[in-house]
Image 1 (spheres, one colour):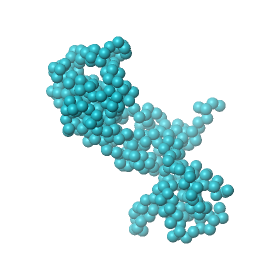
Image 2: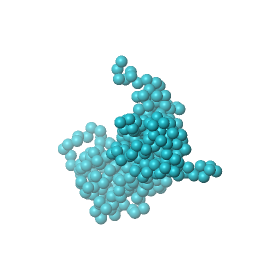
Image 3: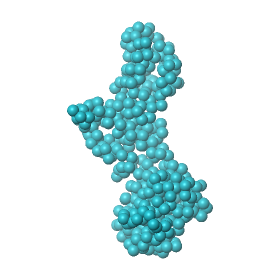
Image 4: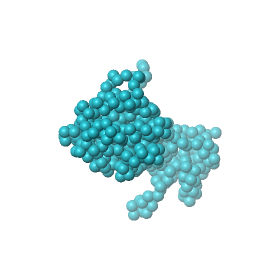
Length: 390
């Protein structure tokens, strides 16, 4: 039996492409405002041939590049209905860090066999110009990670591209820049280049909220997973973890790794423990030395929390207390009273080992929800049981 034959149970992930960071879904949850803004800015390109230059900025995983691509796809289709020809090219400036390599990528859009050596930047721009004039093309140039190019090569190319229309094309086409970066890169340009960007043409991408991350996760589950293999509790766990940074990439990465772990175990579906394990593999920041600081009584409480969280994303203090009595009996430990037990919970939370949150609980008032995100409950349980057994 080979490695591939060792995976038991039904497949859980049916389309890995939909979990790729480069995949662009047809709908981008919670980015309608930015999409509408882009259409408002670029409308004049198709209707009047007036070029536009836009800056998109926001932290990693806020949907900037995905929106730039999706917008360009839809704008090209919309412009065709107005008898306007639109083409676009995405250049990753972290991979292409010189003006020449960027312009070569832009040239290759029209001539895939264009030689990668022997031509200067002005010569390649002349080639691009001929294609734009011949077919009256409005060219959307998306420079992803634009800050890398600006720091290494300066803003000369930005200036040339933003002035391309007035000096070269004369209403026979246009070049339109979409700069994508984690920061507002205006300060990295010289004054002449900066002046070609209207202050109103800066589009900001805020971090995703937990609700938005849940919606993104749910969308990818529908696109990539077999039916009934990921439930709402699992998606809530992923969204809660990813909300620490507001990064959709983290949520999608957790989703894929959780699915892979479930398949490796031969499970029928993804559970919350798969999510914790996936997070521990990729993002865990739990310092095991924190466990060395716990006395036996607190270690027993933490072990009880791990036991209670085996199959749940969140538990209440009442649920943990029920498990706590059994764990105390198992390890010959005298159960502490409610007041002392609560102090141990607070101490574990203060140390960053668990997360606690006070929430409303019907007519009974408030209760405390306990979660564990930095480590797998199963792995932590094994380690704690080992320590208690010494």
